[in-house]
Length: 435
Image (cartoon, rainbow, N blue to C red; front, side):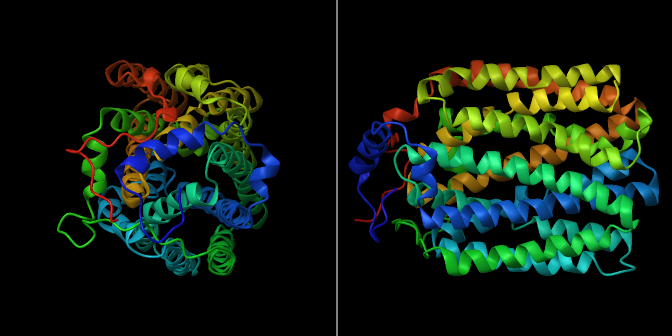
């Protein structure tokens, strides 16, 4: 998007995206030539490694204390649920303030909260509260970062940049999951792993503070009016295409259940703690491969493949009901992760269809819905795993996700989504932009 202090008029928003998307495909070399992109890329990668280290540590810590699949899934779910309430309230800051300042502040806050989790002797109840608090500002950070990216990488470079970040994100998760399982197995204590996660947030804040510009949002005529903070919710809900794209992203909550049940699933198939990180990395391996393919996919094919890939993501997970060994399970979950690259298609289209002055709030709503769907999905999966084997709980969740994806695609006609036509701004639905 444009980087001027004043926003373009409606006509510019209508024309701009179509003109820019017609500029042709960009390559990896053009994308990494941007210094600001490299900073965003590195900050995201190293903090993601820390996040996944912490998730493995938390899962093992809770399961060791309780031996309960439901409690393990509940604590895992707490890393997703709070943003449903906090995102609409906080996201307005990313459409009012410097987006760099927002990202730095959130990183430092999370560093403090995660650091408190690493204090020896922290009761389980206090740990759960800290997990809740640390998760609350996550949509604000994601909204600020994703709203900044189209400015850093305008034109066709944006789709390639999203693919690069997703692929690297996958590699970082693989490293975090695998290292987390090995570190906890080697030390017998997950708390040092949590301390490492806190340090990654501090490093991310430093990189962002000194590595990118302030990136203030384009002004909005409604920035001082009541309802500004929640305007992103109405913006998405009133637009059938945007709501459909958000909904198909939220379906991913059904496909994340294997991560939450990896520990009890490993116990079911007779694998040790060292196998947990490998299992949790399975779908991420596939997602990384899929993200690389996304970078080479044109807009027309991204539109056509969105719903079929979303529906197919659950198919390999359904085979988990057979409870195969560790390696066959990793292959199945990797296949699901590769198909799950439909998420990148949906994110690209969603971001490109929203103008800058409301982008952070709209993205925050979609992000909060995704995190909430993941939290509800893993929580229900954990409850189901108390009544049936974890392998069957994973398969049932996957079947529900595939069915939902097909229904959403049909109702919202997502096969017709075309980000190349530009941003649509019906007068009844859009905020006016400052001159």
